[in-house]
Image 1 (cartoon, one colour):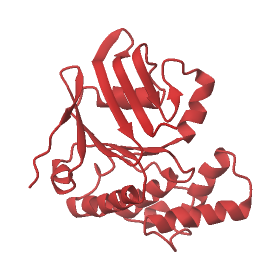
Image 2 (cartoon, one colour):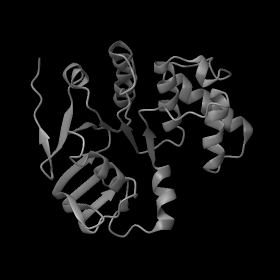
Image 3 (cartoon, one colour):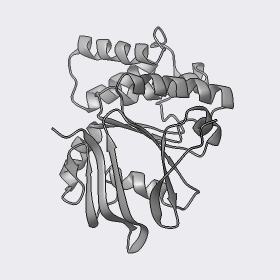
Image 4 (cartoon, helix red, strand yellow):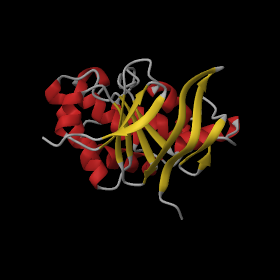
Length: 227
């Protein structure tokens, strides 16, 4: 069985009739941690939207977690997205319910029914991000860094093959950003696969890893200088 999580060969990514990225060639494997960088308007969002099925792939080859993006049908997209965890810049927690109820909502929406299994899974993912014993708290009672840890825990609920982290430190101060990065890198060391879009070059410098850049209608790897 292939350990490829993302693969593009000769792909072009469009928004409507406009070609955003051309001749994309990229492969990412299980256990990788890859940054996606680039200025606003250079195609990062289009790249991510193609990965999650929001933008169809019309030219070239592309696969993600076993799904052929060229052959992807609308009724395949919910199943694809269950294989991908997403961490957002804005946390996107439901403010009117506790941390446990936020996690329970996601699990029930993806077919979980057993109450004990839901409770156990929620505790497991919270423990994995260092947030045990906060399940009864509401998002407004948590700091930004704590909310983002809960958001990371939420992304882990269905044991995704890949996590797309879209500017996960964008709303955090530098020290809190580093603390959240420690969580992500620890999960990566345990085998979780990450593609992380970021503008934060302090993070790139402190936590160097394989890096893709969107620029001039292309996606290419850049070599980070080791400090």
